Image (cartoon, rainbow, N blue to C red; front, side, top):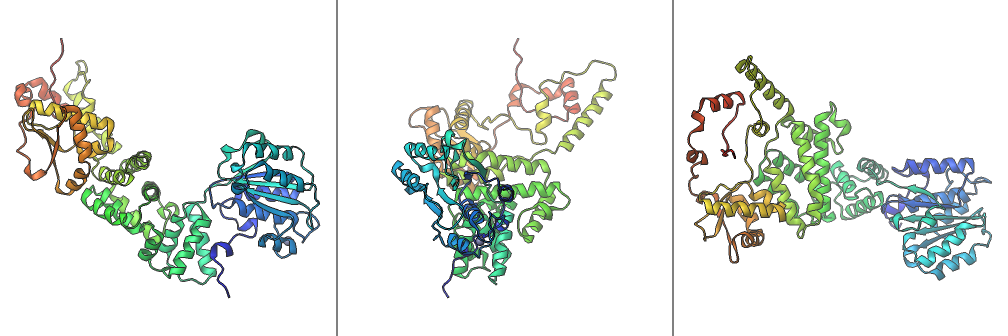
Length: 536
Ligand SMILES: [Zn+2]
């Protein structure tokens, strides 16, 4: 017996078995039931979501011989149904718009329109990738759509509906297919695995489902590959042949990110990088995990909402224990807003690496409850310190309130010489504008410059040195921009950094000795960060 690939074997034969497109199949079935059949349909949606499959089911239902009129579900047994399934029906013509684009091709169709169907009720033309037709071909098509013979039905399918002329769109009944949710794909795969009596582990099924990225057909083809290689029970090997990411590694990386352990996060990232170069898939899965974390934190029963294996649900459940919802939402937001920056950068893999570092070295978020608590404490202190007098002016203090417990000034360099410090600050501002990804991981490092003409020096922890050196070009270009031709950035290990320079406030007198200042510091639980002279 020859082996029929799963993708062909499990093409759904009825509307009922089409996965995730009920918003299309239910109205179509209703139309078949009531006999309100349009003469032209347009199916839109990304590849592999079931457009041509539904077109064939519709063709079978229209011509099914199990009844003397169109049926709601094809019988798949009569000669007409069998011929359509085999692609040998004289009444159903499948045309590939991509290779059949010219006006002459469409005229050939026009010349056949008057023929009566060979055995069925309708002659049905299924034109796939219809957006590929030339303008002249569309015009010829339009003429046919204006006055179609009653026995002719067109079914168009396209991944790019915006490329179809409005005049054509206004003459078709349009159905937009959705990408299929990952859990539905996983369910469909589980059914196939069961029917085929395959021994597949759950994590491999989910790996395949995710790799399909919303296309059931693609997912089933990937399943075919895994079955052929005999890796249905081995997640690591299955991931390797599909060029997919090992979900457990991704979860390890996210765990390190949550711990703010940039070094560990990078270690796992480098492991993931050997599994696949698919940056888009990486981001997609990363967002998926962050989404799971947010939902798990918010709901009483994470198992109802977290999409993934039972083991993943358990892991997610334990991961969110030590995190606030603000923190998790912020992780999702940062990753989400960085996707286009990563995908469209000159080196997406490098940008992705930076994103991981940025996420893992983020500042702690302050929970809203904690902020309210702090505000309440301040209110109490204010009322006890100033029982009858006017309110203290508070302008300028909000910043330290909301940044506590780690108040942080603007990205000013922690430099030892004033001239060098200015240049370092300028370099950081320049980087922020032209290379936000590089900026994000050098902004908090110690910067220095030996004298007015020496190289700019950045001190970094050992594990970040490799990353920085790979960005040396960017840093040097920025240095030349702010310090003139030939200027360079030297990358040194943190341990070599000279002792911290004296804080600025020593040069500005001792404001904390002032009674009013002390009172203000006490009331606001504040710290002196910077001193600015008031302009008069
Ligand atoms: Zn039939």
